[in-house]
Length: 503
Image 1 (tube, rainbow, N blue to C red):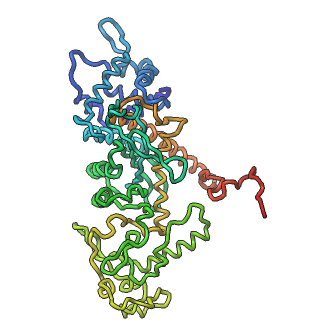
Image 2: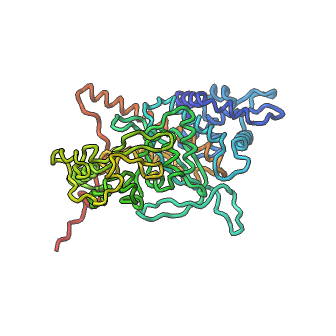
Image 3: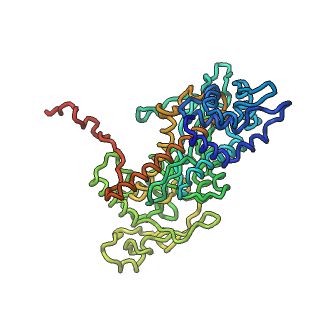
Protein backbone atom coordinates (compact mmCIF):
# COMPACT_ATOMS: atom_id res chain seq x y z
CA UNK A 1 0.00 0.00 0.00
CA UNK A 2 1.85 3.02 -1.30
CA UNK A 3 -0.80 5.66 -0.54
CA UNK A 4 -1.61 6.50 3.09
CA UNK A 5 -4.95 7.99 2.01
CA UNK A 6 -5.92 4.71 0.37
CA UNK A 7 -5.15 2.86 3.61
CA UNK A 8 -7.35 5.25 5.57
CA UNK A 9 -10.20 4.70 3.13
CA UNK A 10 -9.90 0.91 3.47
CA UNK A 11 -9.96 1.25 7.23
CA UNK A 12 -13.00 3.51 7.01
CA UNK A 13 -14.87 0.90 4.98
CA UNK A 14 -13.98 -1.86 7.44
CA UNK A 15 -14.96 0.20 10.46
CA UNK A 16 -18.25 1.19 8.84
CA UNK A 17 -19.10 -2.45 8.17
CA UNK A 18 -18.48 -3.56 11.76
CA UNK A 19 -17.54 -7.08 10.62
CA UNK A 20 -14.17 -7.15 12.40
CA UNK A 21 -15.70 -7.11 15.86
CA UNK A 22 -18.42 -9.52 14.80
CA UNK A 23 -15.93 -12.09 13.51
CA UNK A 24 -13.72 -11.66 16.57
CA UNK A 25 -16.66 -12.70 18.73
CA UNK A 26 -16.90 -15.97 16.78
CA UNK A 27 -13.24 -16.95 17.18
CA UNK A 28 -12.08 -19.15 20.06
CA UNK A 29 -10.06 -17.66 22.90
CA UNK A 30 -6.60 -19.18 23.08
CA UNK A 31 -4.07 -19.46 25.87
CA UNK A 32 -2.45 -16.19 24.84
CA UNK A 33 -3.82 -13.31 22.79
CA UNK A 34 -3.31 -13.38 19.03
CA UNK A 35 -0.97 -10.78 17.59
CA UNK A 36 -2.93 -10.60 14.35
CA UNK A 37 -6.46 -9.23 14.69
CA UNK A 38 -9.27 -9.85 12.21
CA UNK A 39 -9.26 -6.16 11.31
CA UNK A 40 -5.58 -6.23 10.36
CA UNK A 41 -6.11 -9.45 8.40
CA UNK A 42 -8.91 -7.90 6.34
CA UNK A 43 -6.84 -4.76 5.77
CA UNK A 44 -4.03 -6.94 4.48
CA UNK A 45 -6.39 -8.73 2.09
CA UNK A 46 -7.72 -5.44 0.74
CA UNK A 47 -4.22 -3.95 0.44
CA UNK A 48 -3.06 -7.03 -1.45
CA UNK A 49 -5.79 -6.74 -4.08
CA UNK A 50 -5.46 -2.96 -4.22
CA UNK A 51 -1.91 -3.36 -5.49
CA UNK A 52 -2.95 -5.94 -8.10
CA UNK A 53 -1.42 -8.89 -6.27
CA UNK A 54 -3.06 -12.34 -6.51
CA UNK A 55 -5.16 -13.61 -3.61
CA UNK A 56 -2.38 -15.57 -1.88
CA UNK A 57 -1.83 -15.53 1.87
CA UNK A 58 1.87 -15.03 1.31
CA UNK A 59 1.03 -11.88 -0.63
CA UNK A 60 -1.16 -10.69 2.24
CA UNK A 61 1.77 -11.15 4.60
CA UNK A 62 4.01 -9.21 2.22
CA UNK A 63 1.44 -6.41 1.81
CA UNK A 64 1.25 -5.87 5.57
CA UNK A 65 5.02 -5.47 5.74
CA UNK A 66 4.91 -2.92 2.90
CA UNK A 67 3.04 -0.52 5.19
CA UNK A 68 4.78 2.34 6.92
CA UNK A 69 6.54 1.80 10.22
CA UNK A 70 3.92 3.67 12.22
CA UNK A 71 1.06 1.80 10.54
CA UNK A 72 2.70 -1.57 11.17
CA UNK A 73 2.98 -0.84 14.88
CA UNK A 74 -0.54 0.56 15.03
CA UNK A 75 -2.06 -2.44 13.30
CA UNK A 76 -0.05 -5.00 15.28
CA UNK A 77 2.15 -6.19 12.43
CA UNK A 78 5.02 -5.33 14.78
CA UNK A 79 4.12 -5.99 18.41
CA UNK A 80 6.04 -5.36 21.60
CA UNK A 81 6.79 -8.63 23.38
CA UNK A 82 8.76 -9.24 26.56
CA UNK A 83 11.79 -10.05 24.47
CA UNK A 84 11.39 -6.92 22.35
CA UNK A 85 9.67 -6.04 19.05
CA UNK A 86 8.18 -9.07 17.29
CA UNK A 87 7.27 -9.11 13.62
CA UNK A 88 4.17 -10.96 12.46
CA UNK A 89 5.01 -14.36 11.00
CA UNK A 90 3.33 -16.08 8.09
CA UNK A 91 2.34 -18.93 10.40
CA UNK A 92 0.41 -16.50 12.61
CA UNK A 93 -1.40 -15.04 9.60
CA UNK A 94 -2.26 -18.50 8.29
CA UNK A 95 -3.56 -19.52 11.70
CA UNK A 96 -5.84 -16.48 12.07
CA UNK A 97 -7.17 -16.86 8.53
CA UNK A 98 -7.93 -20.52 9.21
CA UNK A 99 -9.88 -19.62 12.35
CA UNK A 100 -11.90 -17.03 10.43
CA UNK A 101 -12.72 -19.49 7.65
CA UNK A 102 -13.79 -22.14 10.14
CA UNK A 103 -16.03 -19.69 12.00
CA UNK A 104 -17.76 -18.55 8.80
CA UNK A 105 -18.14 -21.97 7.18
CA UNK A 106 -21.30 -24.06 7.29
CA UNK A 107 -21.36 -26.92 9.75
CA UNK A 108 -22.31 -29.27 6.91
CA UNK A 109 -20.94 -27.73 3.67
CA UNK A 110 -23.31 -28.14 0.74
CA UNK A 111 -21.96 -25.66 -1.80
CA UNK A 112 -24.07 -22.73 -0.53
CA UNK A 113 -22.86 -19.92 1.78
CA UNK A 114 -24.14 -20.06 5.33
CA UNK A 115 -26.18 -17.21 6.78
CA UNK A 116 -23.26 -15.78 8.78
CA UNK A 117 -20.93 -15.64 5.78
CA UNK A 118 -23.61 -14.03 3.62
CA UNK A 119 -24.29 -11.35 6.23
CA UNK A 120 -20.56 -10.60 6.64
CA UNK A 121 -20.10 -10.16 2.88
CA UNK A 122 -23.26 -8.04 2.66
CA UNK A 123 -21.99 -5.72 5.39
CA UNK A 124 -18.60 -5.32 3.71
CA UNK A 125 -20.00 -4.42 0.30
CA UNK A 126 -22.76 -2.20 1.68
CA UNK A 127 -20.16 -0.30 3.74
CA UNK A 128 -18.08 0.30 0.62
CA UNK A 129 -21.15 1.65 -1.18
CA UNK A 130 -22.02 4.03 1.67
CA UNK A 131 -18.46 5.26 2.21
CA UNK A 132 -17.91 5.88 -1.50
CA UNK A 133 -21.24 7.68 -1.83
CA UNK A 134 -24.39 5.62 -2.23
CA UNK A 135 -25.95 6.40 -5.64
CA UNK A 136 -29.52 7.69 -5.56
CA UNK A 137 -30.87 4.67 -7.37
CA UNK A 138 -32.76 1.54 -6.40
CA UNK A 139 -32.22 -0.27 -9.72
CA UNK A 140 -29.92 -3.30 -9.89
CA UNK A 141 -28.42 -5.29 -12.75
CA UNK A 142 -27.67 -8.93 -11.95
CA UNK A 143 -25.56 -11.49 -13.73
CA UNK A 144 -23.40 -14.50 -13.02
CA UNK A 145 -19.94 -15.58 -14.11
CA UNK A 146 -17.75 -18.62 -13.71
CA UNK A 147 -15.15 -18.95 -10.97
CA UNK A 148 -12.83 -21.90 -11.42
CA UNK A 149 -11.59 -23.81 -8.39
CA UNK A 150 -7.87 -24.27 -7.90
CA UNK A 151 -8.48 -27.91 -7.02
CA UNK A 152 -8.36 -30.57 -9.67
CA UNK A 153 -11.65 -32.24 -10.65
CA UNK A 154 -12.65 -35.42 -8.77
CA UNK A 155 -10.97 -38.68 -9.58
CA UNK A 156 -12.85 -41.78 -10.61
CA UNK A 157 -13.32 -42.71 -6.96
CA UNK A 158 -14.94 -39.31 -6.28
CA UNK A 159 -12.13 -37.87 -4.14
CA UNK A 160 -11.42 -34.17 -4.52
CA UNK A 161 -9.59 -31.48 -2.56
CA UNK A 162 -12.58 -29.15 -3.01
CA UNK A 163 -15.74 -31.17 -2.34
CA UNK A 164 -17.99 -28.08 -2.53
CA UNK A 165 -17.05 -27.33 -6.16
CA UNK A 166 -18.86 -28.99 -9.06
CA UNK A 167 -18.90 -29.13 -12.84
CA UNK A 168 -20.55 -26.17 -14.58
CA UNK A 169 -20.92 -24.58 -18.01
CA UNK A 170 -19.53 -21.28 -19.24
CA UNK A 171 -19.65 -19.43 -22.54
CA UNK A 172 -16.65 -19.28 -24.83
CA UNK A 173 -15.52 -16.73 -27.39
CA UNK A 174 -17.32 -18.75 -30.06
CA UNK A 175 -21.01 -17.83 -30.36
CA UNK A 176 -23.40 -20.62 -29.47
CA UNK A 177 -20.71 -22.75 -27.86
CA UNK A 178 -19.94 -23.49 -24.23
CA UNK A 179 -17.43 -25.51 -22.25
CA UNK A 180 -17.35 -27.19 -18.88
CA UNK A 181 -15.31 -26.05 -15.90
CA UNK A 182 -14.90 -27.18 -12.29
CA UNK A 183 -15.74 -24.57 -9.70
CA UNK A 184 -18.45 -22.13 -8.68
CA UNK A 185 -20.94 -19.61 -10.03
CA UNK A 186 -20.27 -16.03 -8.91
CA UNK A 187 -23.24 -13.64 -8.99
CA UNK A 188 -23.24 -9.89 -8.47
CA UNK A 189 -25.85 -7.14 -8.17
CA UNK A 190 -24.63 -3.81 -9.60
CA UNK A 191 -26.28 -0.45 -8.98
CA UNK A 192 -27.47 1.18 -12.22
CA UNK A 193 -29.21 4.45 -13.01
CA UNK A 194 -32.95 4.82 -12.88
CA UNK A 195 -34.97 4.71 -16.08
CA UNK A 196 -34.30 7.89 -18.06
CA UNK A 197 -32.06 9.49 -15.40
CA UNK A 198 -28.40 10.47 -15.46
CA UNK A 199 -25.36 8.27 -14.90
CA UNK A 200 -24.45 6.93 -11.47
CA UNK A 201 -21.32 5.10 -10.29
CA UNK A 202 -21.91 1.43 -11.03
CA UNK A 203 -21.00 -0.02 -7.64
CA UNK A 204 -21.45 -3.67 -6.76
CA UNK A 205 -23.89 -3.86 -3.86
CA UNK A 206 -24.11 -7.62 -3.24
CA UNK A 207 -22.40 -10.83 -4.35
CA UNK A 208 -22.96 -14.51 -3.74
CA UNK A 209 -20.84 -17.54 -4.55
CA UNK A 210 -22.32 -21.02 -4.81
CA UNK A 211 -21.42 -24.40 -6.21
CA UNK A 212 -22.27 -25.17 -9.82
CA UNK A 213 -24.57 -27.94 -8.64
CA UNK A 214 -27.03 -25.23 -7.51
CA UNK A 215 -29.03 -23.20 -10.02
CA UNK A 216 -27.80 -19.55 -9.97
CA UNK A 217 -31.22 -17.81 -10.24
CA UNK A 218 -32.52 -19.72 -7.23
CA UNK A 219 -29.40 -18.80 -5.24
CA UNK A 220 -29.74 -15.06 -5.90
CA UNK A 221 -33.24 -14.89 -4.40
CA UNK A 222 -31.95 -15.10 -0.77
CA UNK A 223 -29.56 -12.25 -1.60
CA UNK A 224 -32.48 -10.12 -2.81
CA UNK A 225 -34.42 -11.03 0.31
CA UNK A 226 -31.57 -9.82 2.50
CA UNK A 227 -31.47 -6.53 0.56
CA UNK A 228 -35.16 -5.99 1.23
CA UNK A 229 -34.74 -7.03 4.89
CA UNK A 230 -32.06 -4.34 5.29
CA UNK A 231 -34.61 -1.68 4.37
CA UNK A 232 -33.24 -1.06 0.87
CA UNK A 233 -35.93 -0.49 -1.75
CA UNK A 234 -35.83 -2.73 -4.80
CA UNK A 235 -36.62 -0.88 -8.01
CA UNK A 236 -35.86 -2.13 -11.50
CA UNK A 237 -34.17 -5.53 -11.61
CA UNK A 238 -32.38 -6.14 -14.90
CA UNK A 239 -31.59 -9.73 -15.87
CA UNK A 240 -30.79 -11.67 -19.03
CA UNK A 241 -32.57 -14.73 -20.38
CA UNK A 242 -30.56 -16.99 -18.09
CA UNK A 243 -32.79 -15.76 -15.26
CA UNK A 244 -36.07 -15.24 -17.12
CA UNK A 245 -36.00 -18.75 -18.65
CA UNK A 246 -36.26 -20.42 -15.23
CA UNK A 247 -39.53 -21.52 -13.67
CA UNK A 248 -41.35 -18.48 -12.22
CA UNK A 249 -41.24 -19.83 -8.67
CA UNK A 250 -37.43 -19.98 -8.87
CA UNK A 251 -36.81 -16.32 -9.69
CA UNK A 252 -39.55 -14.13 -11.20
CA UNK A 253 -42.28 -14.69 -8.61
CA UNK A 254 -40.06 -14.16 -5.51
CA UNK A 255 -38.47 -11.08 -7.08
CA UNK A 256 -41.86 -9.50 -7.76
CA UNK A 257 -43.01 -10.35 -4.24
CA UNK A 258 -40.11 -8.25 -2.93
CA UNK A 259 -41.30 -5.24 -4.95
CA UNK A 260 -38.85 -5.47 -7.87
CA UNK A 261 -39.83 -4.35 -11.37
CA UNK A 262 -38.37 -6.91 -13.77
CA UNK A 263 -36.68 -5.81 -16.98
CA UNK A 264 -35.57 -8.99 -18.73
CA UNK A 265 -34.50 -10.41 -22.03
CA UNK A 266 -36.72 -13.31 -23.04
CA UNK A 267 -35.36 -16.64 -24.19
CA UNK A 268 -36.35 -17.51 -27.80
CA UNK A 269 -38.48 -20.35 -26.43
CA UNK A 270 -40.48 -17.85 -24.34
CA UNK A 271 -41.15 -15.39 -27.16
CA UNK A 272 -44.30 -15.21 -29.25
CA UNK A 273 -47.78 -16.58 -28.58
CA UNK A 274 -48.02 -18.88 -25.56
CA UNK A 275 -51.70 -19.76 -25.18
CA UNK A 276 -54.77 -17.78 -24.23
CA UNK A 277 -56.64 -16.57 -21.15
CA UNK A 278 -60.41 -16.07 -21.45
CA UNK A 279 -59.89 -15.57 -25.18
CA UNK A 280 -57.05 -13.04 -24.90
CA UNK A 281 -53.78 -14.11 -26.52
CA UNK A 282 -50.75 -14.39 -24.27
CA UNK A 283 -47.58 -13.10 -25.96
CA UNK A 284 -44.28 -11.87 -24.49
CA UNK A 285 -45.78 -11.53 -21.02
CA UNK A 286 -48.87 -9.50 -22.05
CA UNK A 287 -52.49 -10.22 -23.02
CA UNK A 288 -53.68 -9.05 -26.44
CA UNK A 289 -56.95 -8.83 -28.32
CA UNK A 290 -57.76 -12.10 -30.17
CA UNK A 291 -58.12 -10.10 -33.42
CA UNK A 292 -54.53 -8.79 -33.27
CA UNK A 293 -52.69 -9.26 -36.61
CA UNK A 294 -50.59 -12.39 -36.29
CA UNK A 295 -47.57 -10.78 -37.95
CA UNK A 296 -47.19 -8.42 -34.97
CA UNK A 297 -46.71 -11.41 -32.66
CA UNK A 298 -43.62 -12.41 -34.68
CA UNK A 299 -41.65 -9.30 -33.69
CA UNK A 300 -38.18 -9.98 -32.25
CA UNK A 301 -35.58 -7.62 -30.79
CA UNK A 302 -33.68 -5.71 -33.49
CA UNK A 303 -30.22 -6.88 -34.43
CA UNK A 304 -27.24 -5.15 -32.75
CA UNK A 305 -26.16 -3.76 -36.13
CA UNK A 306 -29.62 -2.48 -37.11
CA UNK A 307 -29.67 0.88 -38.85
CA UNK A 308 -31.70 3.88 -37.67
CA UNK A 309 -34.27 3.23 -40.38
CA UNK A 310 -34.65 -0.40 -39.34
CA UNK A 311 -35.03 0.64 -35.70
CA UNK A 312 -37.66 3.19 -36.65
CA UNK A 313 -39.70 0.60 -38.57
CA UNK A 314 -39.37 -1.87 -35.70
CA UNK A 315 -40.50 0.70 -33.14
CA UNK A 316 -43.52 1.62 -35.26
CA UNK A 317 -44.61 -2.03 -35.32
CA UNK A 318 -44.20 -2.45 -31.56
CA UNK A 319 -46.18 0.75 -31.01
CA UNK A 320 -48.95 -0.63 -33.20
CA UNK A 321 -48.89 -3.91 -31.24
CA UNK A 322 -49.30 -2.00 -27.98
CA UNK A 323 -52.66 -0.68 -29.21
CA UNK A 324 -54.08 -4.22 -29.05
CA UNK A 325 -52.81 -4.91 -25.54
CA UNK A 326 -55.20 -5.34 -22.63
CA UNK A 327 -54.27 -2.59 -20.19
CA UNK A 328 -54.02 -3.00 -16.43
CA UNK A 329 -57.05 -1.44 -14.82
CA UNK A 330 -56.09 -2.12 -11.19
CA UNK A 331 -52.90 -2.79 -9.30
CA UNK A 332 -51.95 -6.30 -8.24
CA UNK A 333 -53.55 -7.24 -4.93
CA UNK A 334 -52.04 -9.31 -2.13
CA UNK A 335 -53.07 -12.56 -3.81
CA UNK A 336 -51.51 -11.56 -7.15
CA UNK A 337 -54.77 -10.83 -9.03
CA UNK A 338 -55.56 -7.73 -11.09
CA UNK A 339 -58.15 -6.53 -13.61
CA UNK A 340 -57.33 -5.90 -17.28
CA UNK A 341 -59.46 -3.81 -19.65
CA UNK A 342 -60.22 -4.53 -23.30
CA UNK A 343 -58.27 -2.23 -25.68
CA UNK A 344 -61.52 -1.23 -27.43
CA UNK A 345 -63.13 -0.32 -24.11
CA UNK A 346 -59.97 1.66 -23.27
CA UNK A 347 -60.31 3.66 -26.50
CA UNK A 348 -57.20 2.31 -28.25
CA UNK A 349 -58.87 0.42 -31.13
CA UNK A 350 -62.26 0.31 -32.90
CA UNK A 351 -64.19 -2.96 -32.50
CA UNK A 352 -67.84 -3.83 -33.41
CA UNK A 353 -68.15 -5.76 -30.13
CA UNK A 354 -67.75 -2.41 -28.34
CA UNK A 355 -70.13 -0.08 -30.26
CA UNK A 356 -68.93 3.00 -28.36
CA UNK A 357 -65.42 2.44 -29.75
CA UNK A 358 -66.67 2.79 -33.34
CA UNK A 359 -67.12 6.51 -32.67
CA UNK A 360 -63.33 6.89 -32.45
CA UNK A 361 -61.41 8.40 -35.36
CA UNK A 362 -60.16 6.17 -38.12
CA UNK A 363 -56.60 6.88 -36.97
CA UNK A 364 -57.22 4.04 -34.52
CA UNK A 365 -56.87 0.44 -35.78
CA UNK A 366 -60.19 -1.13 -36.73
CA UNK A 367 -61.11 -4.76 -36.14
CA UNK A 368 -62.61 -5.80 -39.48
CA UNK A 369 -63.25 -9.45 -38.64
CA UNK A 370 -64.11 -9.79 -34.95
CA UNK A 371 -64.66 -13.29 -33.52
CA UNK A 372 -68.18 -14.53 -34.26
CA UNK A 373 -68.56 -16.26 -30.92
CA UNK A 374 -67.24 -13.49 -28.69
CA UNK A 375 -64.94 -14.87 -25.97
CA UNK A 376 -65.03 -13.56 -22.41
CA UNK A 377 -62.44 -10.86 -23.11
CA UNK A 378 -64.67 -9.50 -25.92
CA UNK A 379 -68.03 -9.94 -24.20
CA UNK A 380 -66.87 -8.10 -21.08
CA UNK A 381 -65.09 -4.80 -20.70
CA UNK A 382 -62.65 -6.18 -18.10
CA UNK A 383 -61.37 -9.58 -17.07
CA UNK A 384 -59.59 -10.91 -13.99
CA UNK A 385 -55.98 -11.98 -14.51
CA UNK A 386 -54.69 -14.52 -11.94
CA UNK A 387 -51.05 -14.59 -10.85
CA UNK A 388 -50.23 -17.75 -12.81
CA UNK A 389 -50.88 -16.01 -16.16
CA UNK A 390 -47.57 -14.82 -17.66
CA UNK A 391 -45.91 -15.27 -14.26
CA UNK A 392 -42.65 -16.07 -16.02
CA UNK A 393 -42.47 -13.32 -18.64
CA UNK A 394 -44.39 -10.30 -17.28
CA UNK A 395 -42.13 -7.29 -16.90
CA UNK A 396 -42.06 -3.52 -16.64
CA UNK A 397 -41.97 -2.62 -20.35
CA UNK A 398 -43.57 -4.28 -23.36
CA UNK A 399 -41.19 -6.68 -25.05
CA UNK A 400 -39.50 -5.85 -27.46
CA UNK A 401 -40.50 -2.17 -27.53
CA UNK A 402 -38.23 0.86 -27.70
CA UNK A 403 -38.80 1.58 -24.01
CA UNK A 404 -37.71 -1.95 -23.14
CA UNK A 405 -34.63 -1.71 -25.35
CA UNK A 406 -33.46 1.52 -23.76
CA UNK A 407 -34.20 0.30 -20.25
CA UNK A 408 -32.54 -3.09 -20.74
CA UNK A 409 -29.39 -1.42 -22.10
CA UNK A 410 -28.51 -0.56 -18.49
CA UNK A 411 -27.81 -4.25 -17.82
CA UNK A 412 -24.38 -3.91 -19.44
CA UNK A 413 -23.24 -2.50 -16.08
CA UNK A 414 -23.27 -6.05 -14.72
CA UNK A 415 -20.99 -7.14 -17.55
CA UNK A 416 -18.61 -4.29 -16.76
CA UNK A 417 -18.47 -5.30 -13.09
CA UNK A 418 -17.20 -8.75 -14.04
CA UNK A 419 -14.88 -7.38 -16.71
CA UNK A 420 -12.98 -5.51 -13.99
CA UNK A 421 -12.34 -8.81 -12.19
CA UNK A 422 -11.35 -10.63 -15.38
CA UNK A 423 -9.01 -7.86 -16.51
CA UNK A 424 -5.44 -9.23 -16.82
CA UNK A 425 -4.10 -5.73 -16.06
CA UNK A 426 -5.50 -5.80 -12.50
CA UNK A 427 -7.11 -8.66 -10.58
CA UNK A 428 -7.63 -11.44 -13.09
CA UNK A 429 -9.69 -14.06 -11.22
CA UNK A 430 -8.69 -16.91 -13.49
CA UNK A 431 -7.58 -20.25 -12.06
CA UNK A 432 -4.56 -19.69 -9.81
CA UNK A 433 -5.56 -16.17 -8.74
CA UNK A 434 -6.55 -17.81 -5.47
CA UNK A 435 -4.98 -21.08 -4.40
CA UNK A 436 -7.34 -21.50 -1.48
CA UNK A 437 -9.76 -24.41 -1.44
CA UNK A 438 -13.39 -24.08 -0.45
CA UNK A 439 -16.30 -21.70 -0.77
CA UNK A 440 -15.70 -19.56 2.33
CA UNK A 441 -12.09 -18.42 1.76
CA UNK A 442 -12.75 -17.66 -1.90
CA UNK A 443 -15.90 -15.70 -1.02
CA UNK A 444 -13.93 -13.51 1.39
CA UNK A 445 -11.29 -12.71 -1.22
CA UNK A 446 -13.88 -12.10 -3.95
CA UNK A 447 -15.74 -9.69 -1.67
CA UNK A 448 -12.45 -7.87 -1.08
CA UNK A 449 -11.84 -7.75 -4.84
CA UNK A 450 -15.24 -6.19 -5.45
CA UNK A 451 -14.57 -3.58 -2.76
CA UNK A 452 -11.39 -2.57 -4.57
CA UNK A 453 -13.37 -2.49 -7.83
CA UNK A 454 -15.95 -0.20 -6.23
CA UNK A 455 -13.19 2.17 -5.15
CA UNK A 456 -11.76 2.33 -8.66
CA UNK A 457 -15.19 2.80 -10.26
CA UNK A 458 -16.12 5.56 -7.80
CA UNK A 459 -12.81 7.39 -8.36
CA UNK A 460 -13.17 7.15 -12.15
CA UNK A 461 -16.76 8.43 -11.97
CA UNK A 462 -15.74 11.37 -9.77
CA UNK A 463 -12.90 12.29 -12.12
CA UNK A 464 -15.21 12.06 -15.14
CA UNK A 465 -17.82 14.29 -13.48
CA UNK A 466 -15.16 16.86 -12.58
CA UNK A 467 -13.88 16.87 -16.16
CA UNK A 468 -17.40 17.39 -17.51
CA UNK A 469 -17.92 20.30 -15.14
CA UNK A 470 -14.71 21.92 -16.35
CA UNK A 471 -15.78 21.45 -19.95
CA UNK A 472 -19.20 22.94 -19.19
CA UNK A 473 -17.54 25.98 -17.60
CA UNK A 474 -15.74 26.59 -20.89
CA UNK A 475 -18.89 26.06 -22.94
CA UNK A 476 -17.87 22.60 -24.18
CA UNK A 477 -20.16 19.56 -24.31
CA UNK A 478 -19.45 16.52 -22.06
CA UNK A 479 -16.72 14.23 -23.28
CA UNK A 480 -18.13 11.36 -25.26
CA UNK A 481 -17.31 7.76 -24.47
CA UNK A 482 -14.98 5.99 -26.84
CA UNK A 483 -16.90 3.68 -29.15
CA UNK A 484 -16.06 0.72 -31.31
CA UNK A 485 -14.84 1.85 -34.70
CA UNK A 486 -15.28 -1.45 -36.46
CA UNK A 487 -18.92 -2.44 -36.87
CA UNK A 488 -19.98 -5.96 -36.03
CA UNK A 489 -21.84 -6.59 -39.27
CA UNK A 490 -18.81 -5.57 -41.39
CA UNK A 491 -15.60 -6.50 -39.51
CA UNK A 492 -13.39 -5.63 -42.50
CA UNK A 493 -14.53 -2.00 -42.77
CA UNK A 494 -11.24 -0.31 -41.86
CA UNK A 495 -8.39 1.40 -43.64
CA UNK A 496 -6.30 -1.73 -44.21
CA UNK A 497 -9.18 -3.91 -45.39
CA UNK A 498 -8.55 -5.90 -48.59
CA UNK A 499 -10.33 -4.69 -51.73
CA UNK A 500 -13.84 -6.01 -52.29
CA UNK A 501 -14.16 -8.82 -54.83
CA UNK A 502 -16.76 -8.14 -57.50
CA UNK A 503 -18.04 -10.49 -60.15
